[in-house]
Image (tube, rainbow, N blue to C red; front, side):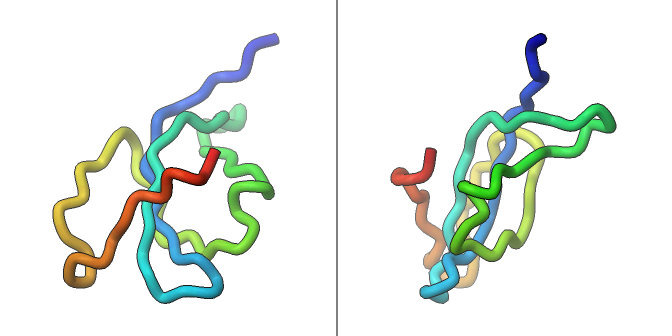
Length: 72
């Protein structure tokens, strides 16, 4: 049984930093269409927003938003 996934952009803070990060990736959806973020992804983060598709963030809180390449 295959699981449906959707491309999303997640904006978040790490618990030990005030820097704002984002991650673009495919995540599974529930039967009702909600994005399921695994606990392993959420650990140590405060999720600010989950946006449908790839969001091109130009500026957020000054120029402090950085892509986090270390996230799965």
